Length: 100
Image (cartoon, rainbow, N blue to C red; front, side):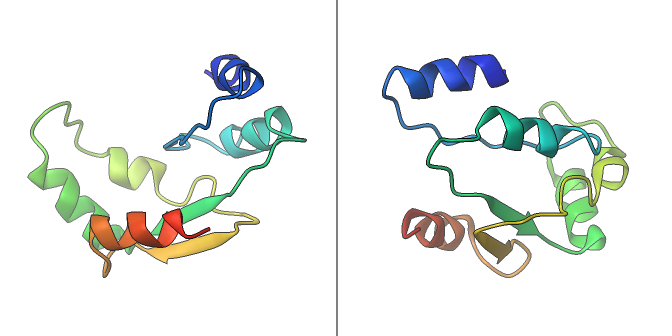
């Protein structure tokens, strides 16, 4: 996927990537692949209880335990923006990100 994103950027496209790091190698690999590009790094954070509650509400593609298993991976920054996903609506988060 990193090669595809780099190809899109090299072709002049803007890209918004939503990544859920599944282990500690994911974010360093993205940061290395995107070195030299104009990137805004955004982290969405919420307490584990909130994420697990939302996981229970999803029906399509639901794999119980992913929230706990992936919690905290890739959150070692640095980030241009850190948002509280527990208390902001999706629209509020998108609007804030769009102002970067």
